Picture 1 (spheres, rainbow, N blue to C red):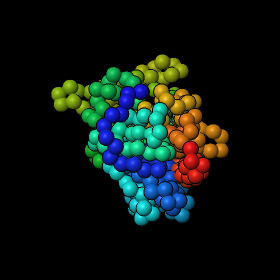
Picture 2 (picture 1 turned 45 degrees about the vertical axis):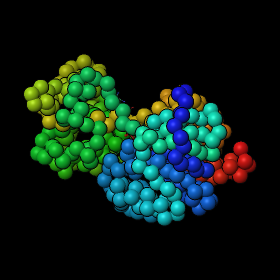
Picture 3 (picture 1 turned 90 degrees about the vertical axis):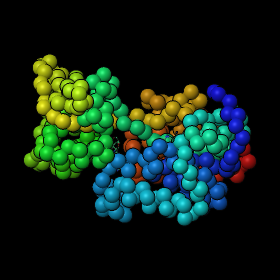
Picture 4 (picture 1 turned 120 degrees about the vertical axis):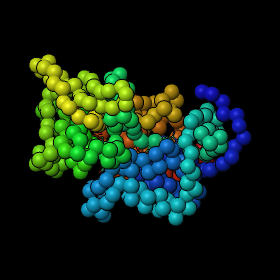
Amino acid sequence: MKAISMSVKYHTKVLIIGSGPAGYTAAVYASRAMLEPILVQGIEPGGQLTTTTEVENWPGDSEVQGPDLMLRMEAHAKAMGTEIIGDIITELNLEQRPFLAQGDSGAIYSADAVILATGARAKWLGLPSEEKFKGFGVSACATCDGFFYRDQEIVVVGGGNTAVEEALFLTNFASKVTLVHRRDELRAEKILQDRLFKHPKIETMWFNELVEVIGADAPLGVEAAQVKNVITGEMTEIACKGVFIAIGHAPANELVKDILEMHNGGYVKVETGSTRTSLPGIFAAGDLTDHIYRQAVTSAGMGCMAALDAEKFLAKGR
Ligand code: FAD
Ligand code: NAP
C-alpha cells in the first residue's frame, strides 16, 4: 500500500465512499447519530439507478425515475447534515488510525471509521471488437445512449433484469431489438419477461452468444453483430447499429481488494448479519458486498446497518 503523504484536508468520524442507495442511506443514519459524516460521491453521483428510468420496486413509489430517486436521497442526506463532496477516492491507507483516503482532487480525508459503498460496475465480454466500438455503437447503458438509435436495429446481450429492461427501453427508439441470450431461460423477473415476450419490436435469440461486433473504420461504427449458437455452432450475422452489453455487474472493489477479505469472486466479505469487514472500523454495504440480492432496497438496508455498526464501533472508542 502506498503511503498517503499530503496534508489532511478533511477529518470526519465517518467517511462514506459512494453515493448509491447504500451510501446515502448510511449518510442519513450517520448524520442522525450526530457523527457528522462526509460522503464522497465518486464518478457516478447517485450510482447505478441514475442509469435507468422507471424503478417500480422502491417501497412507497409504485413508479419513480431512478435519477429522481437518487436526487431525493442526496437531498435527504444533505438535509440531515451530511457533507457531500464531489470527488473520487483513489487510494486508501487503512494501516494507520485515523484511516486515510486520497481524493482525486488532491484532498486527503482522514476518518475514524469508513463505510465502503462503492457498488458495482457493468461487466464486459472482453472481445477486442467490443472494445474497439465502445462509444461508437457498443454501450452498456441504454438510458445514456439509446437516443442515438432512432429507427435503427439494436442487439442486446444478456438474460437478467438489466438486459430485459434495456431491451424494453430501447424499443422507444429502435425499429427492432434482438435479445441474444446464451440459454433459453431468462433470469429476469417474471413481470419483465412478460412485457418482453409481448413486445412486437423485440425478438429473442436463444442459445446464442456474441462472438464479434462487426463495423466500419471510417467513420467508426457498428454494422452487425456476429452471434454463435452454443449448441450447433451455427454463426449468424444480425444487422444492427447498436450493441448493448447487459451481462451483469462486478463489485467495484479496486480500493480494497488487496486489503480486505473477499469472497464469491471479488465481493467484500462481511460478518453474517452485519456490515463489519475483516478490518475493524471498516464497514461495507450494498452491491459491493452482495452477490445475491443486489437491489436498491437491500443496498439501502445495508447502508443503514453500516451506519449503526459504525456508530457502535465509535462508541466503544476503537
Ligand atoms: P451503486 O448504486 O453501484 O453506487 C456506487 C457508488 O459508489 C456510485 O455513486 C459511485 O460513484 C461510487 N464510487 C465507486 N467507486 C468510488 C470511489 N473510488 N470513490 C468514491 N465513490 C466511488 N435495483 C432495484 O432495486 N430496482 C430497479 O429497478 C433497478 N434497476 C436497475 C437498472 C439498471 C440499469 C441497473 C444497472 C441496476 C438496477 N438496479 C435496480 C440495481 C441497483 O441499482 C443496485 O442494486 C444499487 O444501485 C446498488 O446500490 P449501491 O449503493 O450498493 O451502489
Ligand atoms: P445478472 O442478474 O447477473 O444477469 C446477467 C445475465 O447476463 C445473465 O442472464 C447471464 O446469463 C448473462 N451473462 C453473464 N455473463 C455472460 C457472458 N459472458 N456471456 C453471455 N451472457 C452472460 O445481472 P443484471 O441483469 O445486470 O442484474 C444485476 C442485479 O441488479 C440483479 O440483482 C438484478 O436483480 C438487479 N437489477 C434489478 C432490476 C429491477 O429490479 N428491475 C433491474 C436491473 C437490475 P445466465 O443467465 O446464463 O447466467
